[in-house]
Length: 272
Image (cartoon, rainbow, N blue to C red; front, top):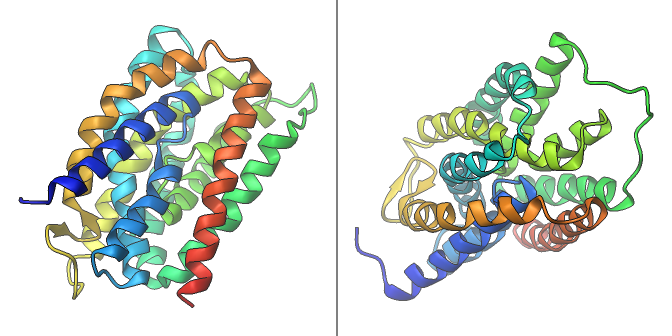
């Protein structure tokens, strides 16, 4: 695999940044990667709609690596709620497979970009307003967790993110402390990524006009460089997450999501 040095540098910087944010915010880095990978793929001649889809799929694949790296750091601090991971995982896998093997392949890239922008903006607003849940609200039972997991896995598959933009607000809504929610979201990124990546590879096998070094919807140069670099900084982000006050952490989360939602709204409207 031969790629130009400038692209390697761009992907390395993206990997270092997203790894840090994955550990800090529990978002798997996907919300950062998708807009930038869309830009890089479009600049290299990929059709705009296909570029969005490949950016989403490649972003999801890198989460397999960043999730493992950041979870180790969170687990050492006892912040991961493994009971919630176990309860949400079955629904996440099912929702991810439905999204990546069915709906993702059918939707146009412009539609996915607009959906990305809308849903991320909604999630950011919920975080930014810092609404307090009812004190009596608790985590739902097994059926409720499976249903919530299905929604998280499905939406993550459509936007190429580790699910933090859905799972963190869901857990805080259930009165889970923000630091535990972020840590648990990072752990959920692994089953989310595995289920969706399998679907992206299968559904993208017979596509025409793919860029060089593609495997289904995955762009392998980006996956390789970003995954390598992101695992270096994810533990640093996880360490920082446990030192920030709750409100500041939520505001950082929301502000980043607003910026990226605006860019993807622009991409979606420009490719209609």
